View 1 (spheres, rainbow, N blue to C red):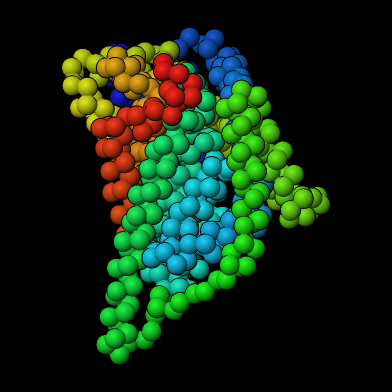
View 2 (tube, helix red, strand yellow):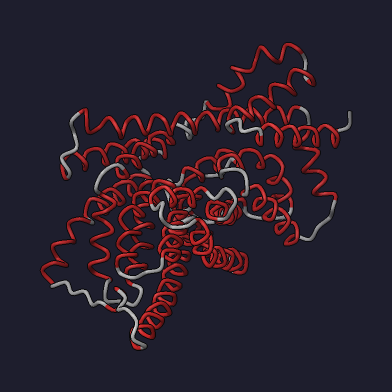
Amino acid sequence: MSDLTLGALYGLATLVIMFSGLPIAFALGVVATGFMYFCMPPSSLDTITQNVYEEMASITLLSIPLFILKGAAIGKSPAGKDLYSAIHTWMHKIPGGLGIANVFACALFAAMAGSSPATCSAIGSAGIPEMRKRGYSPGFAAGIIAAGGTLGILLPPSITMILYAVAAEQSLGRLFLAGIGPGVLLVVLFAGYAVYRARKEYRMALEVYNNGGAKSAYLEDEHFTLAQKVEMLPRVLPFIILLIGVMVALYGGFATPSETAGLGALLAMLLLAVIYGVWRPSELSPILSSSIKESTMLLLIIGMSLFYSYVMSYLHISQSAAAWVVSLHLSKWLLLAVILLMVVVFGFFLPPVSIILMTAPIILPPLKDAGFDLIWFGIVMTVVMEMGLIHPPVGLNIFVIKNIAPDIPLKDVVWGVFPFLILMLVAVLLLCFFPAIATGLPDMIMGAK
């Protein structure tokens, strides 16, 4: 059987099993085991557990459950609501200030949780009701939270970037630093759109009122005294302590990424105990059980994805696919465009974790041969996968929004996120024209590669 035929069967079997409704981890494991049974020596079946274990025996992957614990500690506490309230108090006078406050809150929360769904849920549960209460349209309120939540896989510490660092064999510290510039860029773009959209909705509300219609909450004026603003500042302090502690430990050379993850989890639990009084077993139980469930699910997907990639490599499917892409002799940028389009299509059906681990063996060699910096590409790919989190049919953050705001029609949520998809595409183009947005900071701090 030719490599082309074998690869086509491998891909087709994967799609069929996934569309059958089997969970992703088991779907990948079933396909890999089936092809191992029929296409590899019989003795290979005896090494399945060993292969999965060896693929996962990475010290870098140890940081994932610890970062998840840190995110759960923040997400399951009042910390997210406090962060949002403090930022809103200081920014309410700016046109669209409530929307900007949600973007900033998502960015800060993402920088500590490392998870898009956790960011979306924690900030959205407070932010969406507040925006709607003040006249923001349901679609706009849902869209800004869904898009802001995607920052969780771009700003460090990102679990998605940890997996990319493992798959691409790149420096995790350099990758984390490279995500800061594009993360700030997206925050600025999202905040700018929030100002534009809020002004537009304000003018519409004012026109309706002047024509004898009902007075929208948009037209109500909020006031906070300086004392109230200062009183809110300590609510941001726990986040600043946690963020500075993790960053200093990682980039100051005091700890490895895995040790930093442990430090972050410990600091988060300590802050919960000291500031919010969350220390009793009954209060810690939801945090720990949530961390265990999410870690188990994610690590099972990682293990099976790596096993899936191992079988694909053994059968020379990934090597043949990479060689075929090279043989097309595409120009450098056309090659990038084709690969990113493929990532977008995969994003219709798969989460970022699976996309990275399944495609890395195929797409990274041609990109490296074409002269692309794999750190830079990792950031671009992450932004494209962020788009997958909010575009239909399987945008994960869309369903998180439906869970926390079930009364907002799905159609409104989808149309609400559409402008942010355009802004992410603009960010990808800017990264292509100005790669230093991603590579400048790691080159400045860690030296040019």
